[in-house]
Image (cartoon, rainbow, N blue to C red):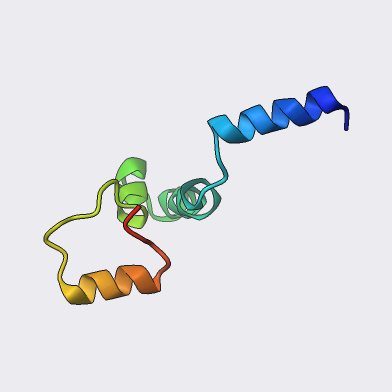
Length: 72
């Protein structure tokens, strides 16, 4: 790999990081959408909520943390 290609990959990663949303949640939502239908964005939001909701119960928070989701 040339230095230029490496720098291009660094720029790409900075613009589009390989986070859980892109590695796990979006692919899972695409599979669910293909198999069962439904709105793709709703599936993504269910797997990867856009915001931490203040009204989550202690049980909700414990479950979310057990799944590896933190209060980003």
